[in-house]
Image (cartoon, rainbow, N blue to C red):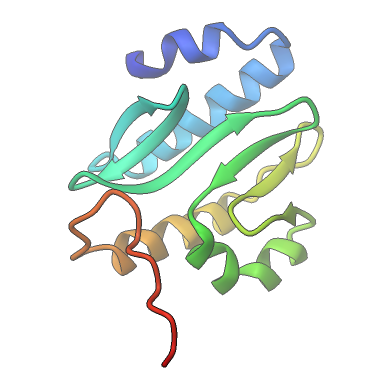
Length: 129
């Protein structure tokens, strides 16, 4: 995936670089209809111009950002996989195995849930009256 080459090359730690490349290649191979792009200096995958999943590299983990709707929906699965999460992302420790089944579940959800989305991000939820 040439679009991610410079991002991957800039990761100083060889193990982190290898892991990040492995995950990005898996997403690209598993979801060939998604468009790989770099936005805000982060690798992302889009579907019909809408955000599906993004990644970032931190000292202790690879961050997976599928938007808060997916994090909320799969919070229990994320914790069961041994990962921590915030409202916007889940953290895969560099020494932790990658739970590709979990990633597939999250990505599949976003693709289906955002199939008719016409914006990059999900529209903000309207407050209850």
